[in-house]
Length: 63
Length: 221
Image (tube, rainbow over all chains, first blue to last red; front, side, top):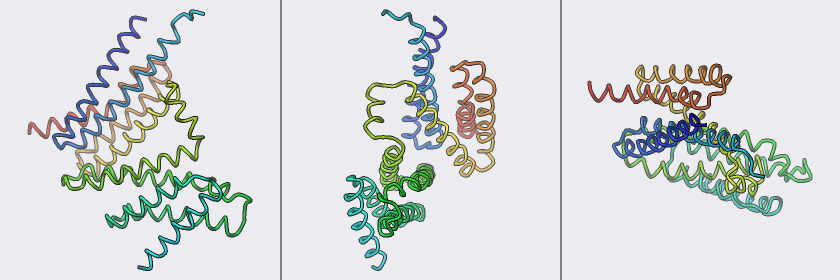
């Protein structure tokens, strides 16, 4: 549980970091790295959602 | 002039067909937007996209005139999706090329093409599933379908961008494409079987890290 929660936080923050980096890089005019950063942000966001689902499934149902 | 008259006739007839059979003029609206893009920007790829729409519209007309099916939209549904997917690929590559061009005045045309792509996407979604259920998926945050969609989008974008970086950077883009191939193999063959979601995602980021290393190298050297 702890490991999944840690990975959840890592994937969320790195997703935000990559999306922010894509905005910053596109403002600098570096479009190829900006688009790659954007894709990385999407991949990490989907990773976050998968882990979130995993964590939710593990939780004992309250009724 | 002649082409303008033909385009106008196609638009009018497609509005008639849309209203008569599907009660939805979204395809016609997207066709008009693409057509305007072709006229204003006079670009080969946009014209190609417009031509695909013209083909689609003619198929509608053909099916309605020859009465091949009781409802021509049945016939169109069979051919609509591959055409639209092809159009989406053309538009996506067009956007990628526009984005990597250094001139900032290309941004205006990129925005128009993005609007076209969004409309095309709406059409594809419309063709694949009922629109209301798709929106309901997003509202209720069905995580399974959302993850599937995000993975699909990121996979397609990664492939397109790897090819674009190869075209734009030449030999320097080769490691990116190789990195993409390696990441696909690792993600699908190794981590997909072990069930580690996080490591699978990290392995998909290999081309991104390669791009950032190349960029840092070119800045430093």
